[in-house]
Length: 486
Image 1 (tube, helix red, strand yellow):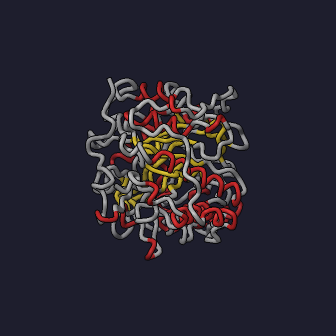
Image 2: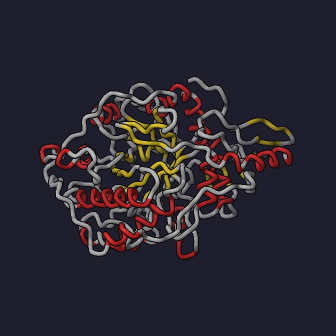
Image 3: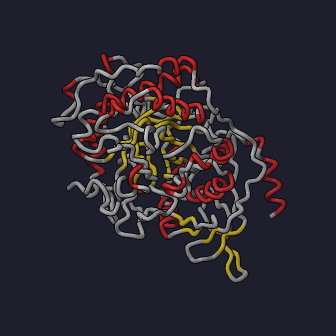
């Protein structure tokens, strides 16, 4: 154990930049060195739920390296290559956590908003929340994360549009925030960083939202307000469902002409429970990978709404849940070497021009005239925020310091992050991570190497709304981070 830990620590400095930055090319995420298309194998990561975001006390989901090391080691064994993090403070240092997830071969999808007052768009009256102070906060998030090579992209909004009534006013403002973020990134970052939107899978407004954000105003393919990616939070596959029964076939048909990457920013219906995750083989199978770029399972840590893969206790120990091992088994049934090692498509992509005819739902906004920058915002873009800028740092110890118990109650031993080689991302089945000991016997657990591998309801019936998960209700501090402050 001591020899193993010393070896891992010694490797830390040379393995600080494990992943290769990803680029958007047409409808795919592409490895910038190999040219391979990338499929997201993700987990939503918001430790502590609403209480996990407490910037006034120096706390958010990526502020404690010890906790991140614990969870990165576990998600390595699961097979995760991407985490989505909803609520983050631009004033906290995230270097250690970002470096840990980077070395573990995991990318980060970051929401620039938070549900606190003044830190998100008001979906019904967006003009009241679109001002320089709000943009300054989103730009500060960009500064904080822009230098991490494992940053996959930013979400400019999450479920701001959840019905026709919120689609009446919000779309131009969401698109304006996308424009402003991309303009700031161009001025202050060393690379292009994708910016997109995470939509609610509400079929009345889903297609219109996608069309509104992916089109090019005046036919300009370099339009800065055009989204680089489009994602959806979908819970339509429940239990032993199928490609057609779940409505996944309808989604593939809807997005088959997409000009930007489309993926699930949340999925994982929890009825029945425990979950069976039978959708995994389809999401990463031939019926979907030509259109979708994978997805993010909701969610890593158990909260009252019962979507967790693991229970995080008050003493920071962790109890794995049945869902963790079931999901791991489903991932291991996919031949991810074949899924990931596919050269990106070279066929040309047609980018639609923004026209009112793209919008089908009566009452959804079809005016592509965007709001101008609010007073003072251009100065911030020109001069920069001047806030905290993150960087990759060396990690001296990869060992997990907290007790982790498997689904049968046995304690996992020798649990540690395995730093990956340069340019390598995590793959299901490639990291075992630790062992489970019981009554003096030790058995290997974790991923196994060499694996081969009519419309349903729009939301799982037990997936609580943002308002229902709010703690306290008056500020809607939701770990699901639905930023429509209704």
